[in-house]
Structures are given as C-alpha cells and as structure tokens.
Image 1 (cartoon, rainbow, N blue to C red):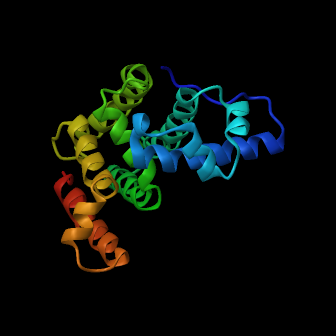
Image 2 (spheres, rainbow, N blue to C red):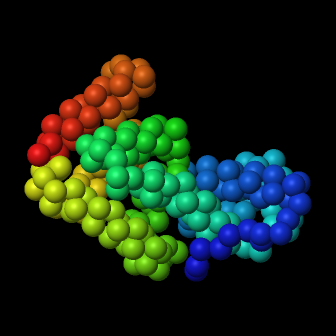
Length: 207
C-alpha cells in the first residue's frame, strides 16, 4: 500500500464528499484499526452509500492512504513552522503547546498515526524515511545552532522532539488510562498538563 490522495481536479461537491468520507474514515479507522474497518462502516458513518464512497476511492486501502496523508499534513505543520530566527525557548514551547492542543482537538488522528506505527508503518514507511526524516533533520540542525550559540541547554535535539511528541500525543493515544487516573474535567486536565510541560521545557532547556 502507498499513501494515495484524492484527485486534484474536482468540483466543489466532489471535494465536499471526499472530505466527508475522509472524516468518517478517520473515525472508523481510529476506532477499529485498518483490518477491523470496512467500507460499509465508512459509508454508514459518512451517511453515504457504499457505491458512492467507491466512486471517490476505489478500495479501502485508498481511503486509508488519503486519511493518513491528510493527517500527516496537519500534524507536520507546527514543526515546519518553527522559526530559526525566533527565540529558541519560545519556539520550542509554542511547538509543544500546539502539539498538546492538537492531541486534545484531534485525538483520533493521533491514535490513527500511532496504530499505523504499531503495525510497522506499512503505508507510511517511505514517508518516515524521507519526508519526515528530512524535516526533522532540518529542525534538529536549527536546534543545534541554538545550542552552539549558547541559547539552549546542551541537549540532543532529536530527543527533545521525542520528548515533546511523547508528552503531548500521550494524552490522545492513552486517553482511557488518563480518564481512569484523572478525576477532574478535561479543561483542568489540559490546563495542568500545559502548565507542567511548560515549566519542564522552559526551565530544562534554558542555557
């Protein structure tokens, strides 16, 4: 399987229907996994017929690829926007803050990505080794430059990114465990998470 996106040339109605299918598929795939999901489930969730869904995407694999492609675009934007000319501590905190916000607002996307990785990344393996690796390498070079200039603590940039990913996506991927252990409402949960993460990152990364 490869990541497949919907055709570029399409009418407004077609674009709306494709978006509806992708939203429904995200819900189904993130709940049941790739193997446990069917086109019928996606069609029912989208409120469309199976034949109509297959008009836009030839098979389940194509829908899955389109959902992952959309998810990756959204999830990589915050990292890509990290400004080399900005204040290092502020840039890293703002990135972590956006990742935490995305975990709260789009938990299904995070869980879908996590499930794909746990399955050995059959669809996005090439993406991980090329596009993602290139982006991460560029941002690690930026962070290393900040370290060399004495603007950041002497840490390993790649592990800073790993730390941010694990400390933010955890709230989406392990939601049942968090809900079992946390007694307050979600607003309190994320307020406390943000305050704690900000303290650790801004103090720990200060030169």
